[in-house]
Length: 94
Image 1 (cartoon, helix red, strand yellow):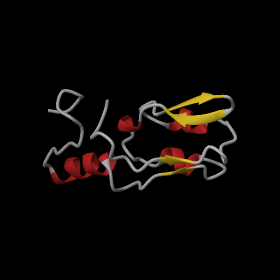
Image 2 (spheres, helix red, strand yellow):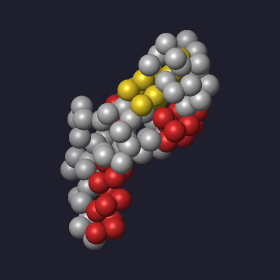
Image 3 (tube, rainbow, N blue to C red):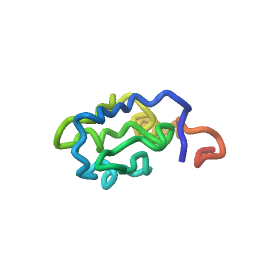
C-alpha cells in the first residue's frame, strides 16, 4: 500500500545503523531492507509514520514524526466516523 508520494517524514542515519534488522521486523509495510549490514529505505511512500521502527531502533538511527502522518489520519478517521484515508485511490482506499 502506498500513501501520498514524497511526504513521509521517515529518515535514516546509515552511519548509526548496526544492521540489527528490528526496523524490518516491526514495519507493517515493508519499508526497509538490509544490505551490507545496514538497513535502508526501499519504499518511503509505503511509510504510514506509525513510529514502530524509530521506537524499536536500539541506536536511534531512525526518526519519524509519528502521529502526524497516515497512521494518525486513518485512526482519526475511524474514531470520528469520517472514514478518511490518506492513501491514493486504488491503493487500498475508497
